[in-house]
Length: 163
Image (cartoon, rainbow, N blue to C red; front, side, top):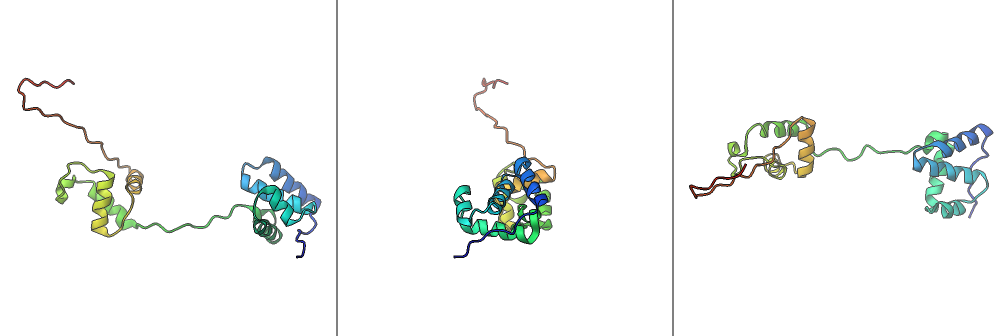
């Protein structure tokens, strides 16, 4: 197997890598800089992987990124992530639904809870979201569900609740 190392580093690039290695708050970027500096010092990818406790192919990927784009190639690369399951129409439905109590829609409860709202909207729209996601959507629109206040009723005419 051919020994893989990076091209010789100019003094300015090496100093820049050392500065980022010493001062960056991004731990992942620090490890990538360390791998490049170790490779420039003549360490093999296997030795670097052992020292940093990562897989050898990860070291190879970092070396390739550095050779293609320099220090900028070592920055964390985040994908766009999964697209949201809901759309603007769903958000509109959430806001409009909580404007009335559940009895307005034929439900037996008097107050909305996030699980109740999520279940009702799943039936109505076909979009299933967790109660927590529904709560976050409500908060993004400045809406908060009230916690129901328990009411104690007694048939005793002499019962006088404290409070």
